[in-house]
Length: 243
Length: 251
Image 1 (cartoon, rainbow over the protein chains, first blue to last red):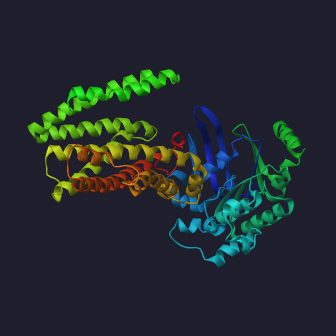
Image 2 (image 1 turned 180 degrees about the vertical axis):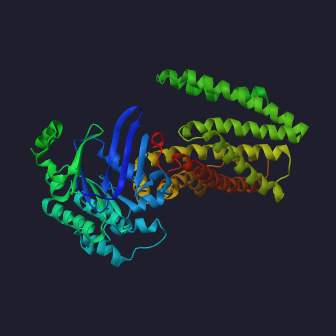
């Protein structure tokens, strides 16, 4: 990475373990402000754990995380999570309608989301207003993911963490969501960190990419390095991944 | 009733013993142990109560209530083993219920301030509160397990632990109170309550027995509501750390 950038999130020697099992080891690096960084790697590499650390849902066992140069543990957890939004892979829905789910981030702050605003967020993710009063439990996997993305957008976070948000979508919908995320990134200068299993997507959408394996960062750089990886481990992963 | 007459009621124990033996239920040993324990425990309590009633000492009344609270706490805490400080949380709950109940009953002179009234009423309030605590803890743990994703979602969106756990807490509180409310709807229609039946058998005026029973029923409603609410609001903060993160071992 030759460009000089301001880190939105910086990791310094991060370890994370559960019951003595090391999930992340010696993670050091930064996600640059205003760019899209894609995270790729096999299942169990620690990608989701890394995102949850950024949102403060968990804390590292060792090391320091900085959000806009501030140590993460000095930031109020509620403010941190509004500032660093996350769309979880499982796209969980709370009981109620799509509107109930979309208005949840505002409700947690004691304010309401107008139906017009809710419709606008729905349209951003390619769903029309007829979904607004539908029971969230009746949505298909793809629809749930879209509503989950829309719900994350409601907080208008400066940093967005996206955990495989297009995995349950059809090809057309994937394109729509990709375009939306690129638009949000460009228009509002939102920093995006996006976990994906789709390497073409990682190259196409990401400005930068991290390759993770077994809880370690193997290689980072401008996403195009995935086309011609220099490290043997990354080459093996890319060949397997593209197959 | 004399002890000779009472011994005749052991026929009610022989019938299940014979049935258990004939049908190979394998419950003979448990039936005998249960019978012996109930005889020893109740007779012991009977003699202790007789002693306390005759002495009418405030110290003995308090000791008896403490004993009830300790026994109920030790029983109920088993269901909340993963909640930090569950023992004192249950104890605070039971003591609060006891204080509220006795403050109203004695404060408004609804019952005389004597051991004969204070101890049985305390037993009913604390016992009911213990059952409610067990029901609440059981349901609350179930709700936590089945709504883990929802809890994490609300935290991830900037919600507080209280907001993240609100639905599970309210569901568990409601669920633990429902049996008390439902049983009161059919009371008198399906069965006569034990205390009322006891008073009638002992020769009390049925209307007065009903009045006392209603007093107990109303008291049990308070006991149910207060127990599950206090225990719920004391318990949920221990499920999170000071960074508002779900403690892994609790979910």
